[in-house]
Length: 444
Ligand code: SF4
Image (cartoon, rainbow, N blue to C red; front, side):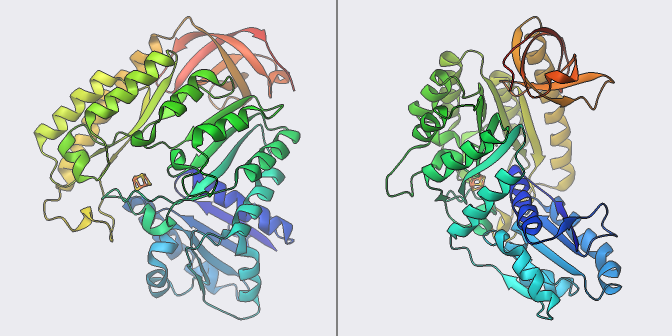
């Protein structure tokens, strides 16, 4: 029996898809080469914006014939869209057999077996934290260990930004026990992982819900002590939660990389307040100043939204001016799309689609110009790369990531893959750098 998983959305979703793949592998399933070959197809969906939901519905439409022509096949929809619109999905696509919410990924094999026995449709949407989900996730990550690995440490979010569906579909914040995280990373390292990205929708909130009251900075200190681990990254961060301890951890812990993803979302205090973001532009600038003064090499990336309800041309221009002042290394830019069930979706002052798209193009143009200028200023620097493979762009080149999370390509022998190498940055691009090899560093 073979399976295929189609993943939409963020790194948490990729980690959840990895979990389901490992659970299925452990239950005797094998990955299919193509959807036609699959007996089980899982769409692991995203609800953050309209577009990935449209894509998922469109694929469900395409899979109608696939499901009709195979009486023993199983079609599952999992993740945020499943959690948000489970029954509605079944009404619109009755050929779906399983709906799996955001806390039941580990049950995929059991649910598929029940469908094979004739029970359908099955809907699992409870949002209570289930420790066996964490355990399966850890086992899955270890089984699929690679040079770089994602390690979820907190699920859900308790912030309720007015445009965001995540707290409603992922539930409130639920942290994982620190010793379980350490054990998982130690197991990953024993299988060759050298860089971990610690994940959470709001990773800096880690520990608040734990009885021992551990902070995220303290978790980083504990992970720093893991032998054989070279690099630690984390994402994504709420600007309000960047504590002095977090800044000290980035500045002082040698394995914690000099990069932070710090979504700003808007550049005026009125919009930030209406978004319920919980900080002002002044606070955000203060965090950036602290980070840059204590970690001069730090790269800061962000998320920027245009077209939030009520955004005027003046708001938009003020936001652009703020972004020009901050000069982000990179940004995920997107146009607001109303998510049913959120506070902002019901506002009468929605910005017309054409205006949103026009502002998005202007924002992208500005951010691209800034990003290339920021990269150009780094040309000539010597940096450490974790070499992760051969490059997709440019034949015969290797690819690696700087500690600031910039892709860098250089000419070198494939035996460097999996090592730390020192390169000089010789040419800047929007996507990263071309480099030249100086010295091979630490090896596995
Ligand atoms: S912090 Fe805000 S935008 Fe981020 S997941 Fe939570 S509610 Fe959504």
